[in-house]
Image (tube, rainbow, N blue to C red; front, side, top):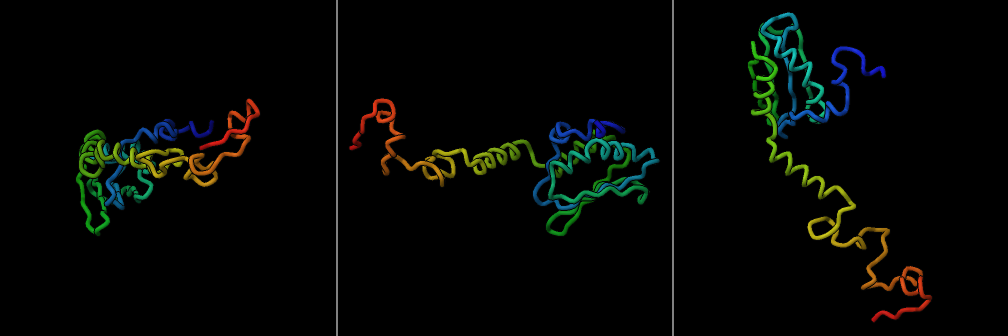
Length: 172
C-alpha cells in the first residue's frame, strides 16, 4: 500500500482521522499555526501540528486551517471567529499535550454537546426511523410505501388468508 510509506503513516488512515477529538465550536472560522521548525521553543507546536492537524481538518471541514513556518520569532496559535474577532494563544515552550489540552478546553465543544448533536442528527437524518419522536409517524407516510390497511384495503395478493387459503376476506 503506497499510502503507508513515510513518517508515521498511521496518520493517513481513516481510523486515526476519526479518532480525533478536537471539534471546534461553530463560531471558529480560521485557525493558523505559526512556528519555526528548527527552534527548540517551537518543538511542541511542531509535534502538535504533525500529530493533530490532519485530525482537526477531518473533524472540522468548514474551518480553514493554515500552518506558517519560519515567519515568527516565537510560536503562537491564532483563531479567527465569525464575528470578525481573533484570539492569539501563546504556545512558546509548551509540549504537544499542553497545547492539545488548551485548544480543547478553550475552542472545542464539550462531550455533552457532541453527544447531543450526534443524537439529533441521527434522529432527523435517517429516513428509516419512524415513530413518535421521528419525522414520520408511520411507514405508510413515506412515498412509495403501501398505504395503511386501516384506510385503504390491501390488494388480495397481500392478504394472508387469500394468499394461503385462497379465501376472500371482508374487512369491517
